[in-house]
Each structure stands twice: as structure tokens, then as C-alpha cells.
Amino acid sequence: MDIDIKHQAIAGTTEPTDIQITIAPNDADDIEIELTSTTQLSKQIKIIILDTLEKVGITSALIQAKDQGAPDRTIKSRTLMAAYLAADINTAVDWRLIDDQN
Image (cartoon, rainbow, N blue to C red; front, top):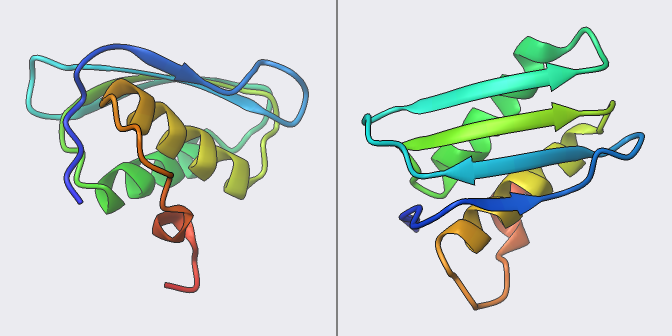
């Protein structure tokens, strides 16, 4: 699956143990991540976001992430949902894309 980011979209919240992901088109052909986090795990969070985007074929996007100590699964699901919203995908989210067992 290749997702084309058409416009800005937001998924998640800034509540404790959550993350808010904002995704928007990027004129450059790369992924740029701006992350603010209440934890020391910034590098790991960026890796999770990049891996999730890679699984759906996104190679160009601007990402703003505001982490409040979200678990890995939440980071993945918020990233995937923001991507679906930004691409105007109206079908059910294929959660298997972020399942570590696949």
C-alpha cells in the first residue's frame, strides 16, 4: 500500500500516555519529524514513526509529534490514523500493518 499525503491531518491527543501526530505534505522528497516528548525516548519514538510510515509506503511528509509518554502501540496507531486521514482514505484501517507479528 502506498499512501499519498494530500493535506494536513491530526490524530491523538496531548493527554498523559498519548501522542498527538500531525502529518502534512512535504515539498521535499523526505520525511521530517519534529518531536517534543516528556520522556527520554526521542530517538526510539522517531524510529517507530518512520517504520510505521515506511510500512504504508510514505516517503515524503512533515510530521509533528507531541509525546506524553505513549506506549509503542499507541505511537504506531496514531501515526497510521493520521496518515489515513491526510490521504482521505475512507476504508477501514488495516491494523495488521502495525502488528509486530506480521
